[in-house]
Length: 121
Image (tube, rainbow, N blue to C red; front, top):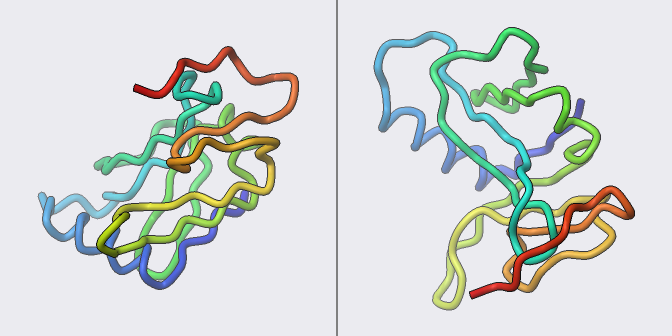
């Protein structure tokens, strides 16, 4: 399983992890997808204290990454970056598995397996 964090993304995620410090040695980031968004799948990024029993585990720099094995095919090769600017700030996902993405970059399609999207509000 390969998820790539840019230097900026890793720095920002480390800051979030340090800000939520509770002494857990397994604290990390859960990267996933869920049904939703304007294109069918929506990215999920959460801080977690430990992996789930079947999670795939990766490490980028000092950030542990946990991935549900069911989400892994949709996330293989994803690059996560962090943008900071006047018009747009936040995490940006570049997904080689996406056949289409929405304008905001938080939702994507992945061929025929994509659930029905919901219009952006």
